[in-house]
Image 1 (cartoon, rainbow, N blue to C red):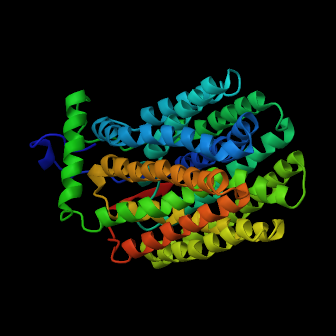
Image 2: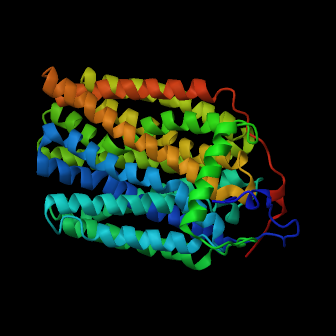
Image 3: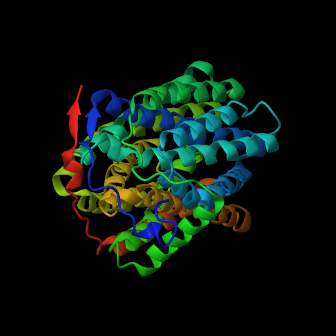
Length: 448
């Protein structure tokens, strides 16, 4: 992360720095990585691996088992995120970390469903850890392809194009079919790698002006410095409140992403469809949500540059309050697939808004020379929410189904009610946060 010793803590980046030249192919490469990792996010985390678990464990245990597997992987990345940020701030470049994490993710994804269930679960845990680490490195590279003036637009384009990766994941499933899960997982891994290559090749970092050796001791010292920064809260006002608020809304949103396939299947089954038809309906619902997310990325990126990241995020959270309430009613009152299609459309737009707004907001609260460190915190709270979210979901659904004898769909609807409460809490926490505008990023030039 950045400052690791009392002496290092006083260091600032060199005042003399060449103008930041951003090439269009660098922007394209960065955006395509968003598409690449979304192939994994949708294809593995949100859809096909959860269905693999459901087929292996049964409908009544699927939420609990998948929640535990996901929580384990997110718990590990939660612990190591600050250390990863420390290493990237000390290293000369962040790109090698991104390449390494991507290759690990791709390799273990190729192993899914080719071994027994428990071994497959371990492979998923490792692949998801590597994927989440890659997100941290990737987000921290946004300043390399944008300026303060266009950060919302570039980030929004990344989100919009990224969701096209979801279509790639769905298309692979459509061509291969849901039955051959091992081949399906392997093709998703290969697609992830292919679309990640332009980022590896074309994004040119300015590089660390003060690279330092990476040692275990330095990482520990950096983590302590991070904790001191958070505890004081004075040097970077609004940062701690933003991170705490982010725990709650990402808890709700990430949980929805994780379980949306299981929820959709149960809604479809409640209408009388067969298991196979329900899985096919799930693909359609997710496809609709993705379509609206693509449009939402462009819209919210424009909004961030127009009204600011903080105000845009406020509107996004208000939207989620309505969406979660409606989504809960679908399960509790069995409103059917038409209502779920409406929820999916609204959720797609709002989902794009979360990532379009909170990445630029985090950067507005972050000093340029500590981007890796602070994005370690940013990723850390996201991982914490990804631990607690599946646990909350699994706990409530298990209590409702196994404790009170309710149908799985009703239990899931009650879990969504809790998610809506988390969004309200995040909105209250974030209200006093004010984003600061940095002008140094405007020096960048863009060329072909």
